[in-house]
Every structure is written in structure tokens, then in C-alpha cells.
Image (cartoon, rainbow, N blue to C red; front, top):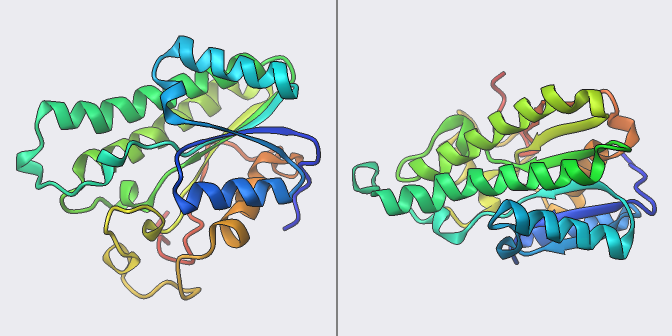
Length: 226
């Protein structure tokens, strides 16, 4: 897989997790002009629209978006019966709001010429995880948002897919063995730049022009259910 993103502007959202840094480095290696946005630029629709517009003004038309921003509170393990309104809002509500704002701002920039979104999800959302109910629900909610956007914006030439890396790539304390019936088929979680970024680059590239609304479990063989 050697996707060509030469000269294309790709916005990557997220913090300083090795996962996000590796994805950004790998996309740059595929020729993309990678612009990273911090989570605090995405707290409202006007803020997200302004951030994306600033990227377009400085670097040129936005072709792709990789959305990985999640607040650290999402990874804190709390028994479900102890989840209060504040935590639920901080994890589930804020994660879904931010995903919506990114979709809307990205659509504003890409609706005239097309493009692609890749949302970074997690098999935790598909399988569930003890003491991570808000995070698991948010990850599955992001998948539903992505599929809904994919259905609506296909006519605009905009594709929306989800990349689900192994759970070890976020500090939630979930190991692949908790979600799989056997060890990962390929032996581990993989490297963000070498193993995951090429999949994201392909989903952003013209080679994946007929792929939308899908979740790609790039997790080394953890999640094999349909």
C-alpha cells in the first residue's frame, strides 16, 4: 500500500499521543501537507470553522481530515454506577460534539471539490469495556456519525470512514487480549507511523475513491467480527 497524497492538505486533530504523532508523520511521508489542530480549537462550531478556514487560507484547499482528538478524561476508568452527569458530558457529549463540529467544518472546506475524512475510533466501542462506558459509547457514537455523514455527503464527493487501531494505542488501560478470543493474529498493536498511517493514507487517497462508511480495524487482528 503506497498511497500518494503529494501536495494535499490534511488536517489532523489531537494531542501529543504517540498514535496521533505517528499518524501525522506517516501521512507526511506519503506526501501530504499535514496541519495539526489542537482540541481546544474545536470546542464550538464557529471555532472549528475558523480553524479550518485558517488552514485553507495558509496552506490551500483542504483535501482530508484525520480526527483523533479525545480529552484525557475519557481514558479514566470509573465503574459504570459511579458515572455522574459531569463525567458523561465531558466524555460522551464533548466527544460527539467535537466530532460533529469537525465534520461540519471539514464539509465547508471540501464540499466544492470533494475529499475524505478518517475518524480514529477504537475496538473498545465495538466490544465494550468494563469501567469505560462513556468512552466506549462515545467511540461507537463517532462511528454512527461517520456513517451518517458518509450517506449524506457521498453526492458531494466526500467520503467518511473510521480507522480502529488496537486499544493499546490510547492510555485507557485496555489490552487487546480483553477484546479478542485469541492473541492478535499479527502479533501486536502495530506502529502508528509504519502500520497505521499507511491505512489512513489509503483511505484519504484517490485509490479509496469507492470506499465510504466503513470501519477498518487496523489492529493486527484483534477485532474479526463483522
